[in-house]
Length: 255
Image (tube, rainbow, N blue to C red; front, side, top):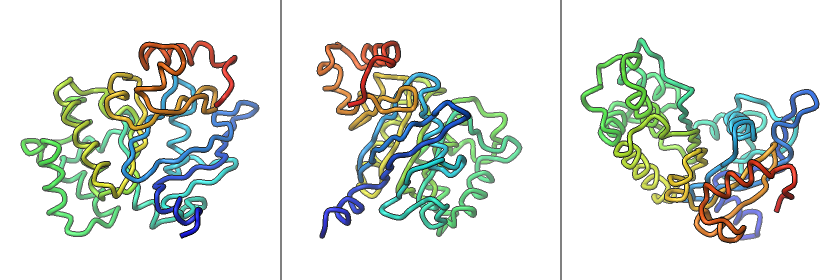
């Protein structure tokens, strides 16, 4: 197998020279990275660094000005319907329809994704996410933490190959967040998919992520193992490194 084909097999997501500008401001300035099979990658940076713009382009919500996005070697620009069906997404700012119950919301999204044996699959994710007693409760009356669980259930529904998570545990208490992290680790360790995860919780990132990318002003400044990267840059913790990168970004050259 040649190197390009081998990379396509190992990489769930491959991004090359991705760029998005608004007027003269580059929200994403020609970044390149991969998410490998079975890997959880943290996309880190302060507000406005380009994280959500990057995820929005991967999802097809925003059209890039330049660059390539591939899912398991298949180009996603222009939108590739089979590839899109192998992705899913959860974020605190993207709640499900409030006047539908948990089951109704999951059924709607299951039909959109073409999930086989949908009723059985819905019951599986309801059990996995601890939502049994909320089956027939309208999502709009759930607590923020409960809504987060439903959004993650939706994100797992089609057994995605690429799972995109934007602050997935932000509204959860420590016990619930721990359980969700376990579910996401289990998903990645099944070795058929990869996860791109944004978070401002550096302890969580250090616990969960195999690799992190530090974004600032639309550029990747640092990349590496979240446990080793701080020491390599003279910091004690990932949070200290995050603060330093955010404050000193204009003077830091991308690695």
